Amino acid sequence: MMRGHDANSFYVIGGTTGHVFFLDVDKLAFINGKWTWSNQVQATPNDEGRYRLETVLHEDIIYLFGGGRPDYVTEFQNLTVFDTKNRKFLEVPTYPDEEWIRTNTDQDGFPQGRRCHSVTKWKNKAIMVGGCSADKDDDDVRHTYRDCRLPGIYRLIPGPCERSAQGTEFSFIARCL
Image 1 (cartoon, helix red, strand yellow):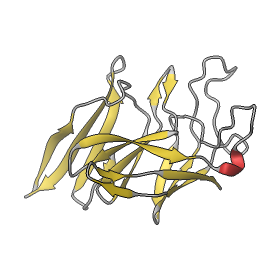
Image 2 (cartoon, one colour; image 1 turned 180 degrees about the horizontal axis):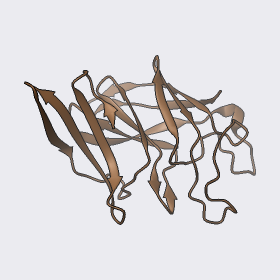
Image 3 (cartoon, helix red, strand yellow; image 1 turned 180 degrees about the vertical axis):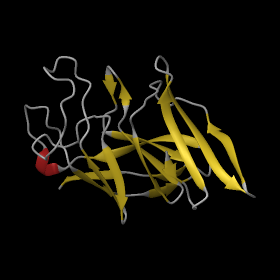
């Protein structure tokens, strides 16, 4: 759950019944002394419902970071975002941290996919730390990301944005702290 545009609204995104994973967006608002619950969208844009994701609201856009299922985590080469004005999901590109690209390795400059992590908004940035993988080949699937050697602690900086007839295109540049 995350706070909405004002002190009287909250968004609940994604989740699970324990068997089914979904990516619904619901809004909880306190209006005229009563709580109201409204479904903003009931969709799974990439056919991968998820839980244990983190979200950040910036202007009218909710950015979804990571999350997944017990056997899958969402990667960070693209971010799913939810446009609160138009009530629709978009997939937006991100850019790697050039300093963390290593040829002939799996270090492509992007944070590793994860769930159970923390993300918070600070100024116009999103700070992401921790989390665990879903790699069942790992000796310890609870492997947590604690430092940049993995890489693990990231500052996500809003990158180039363009306005087009289709709407706004967003991007993030990952930078290791």
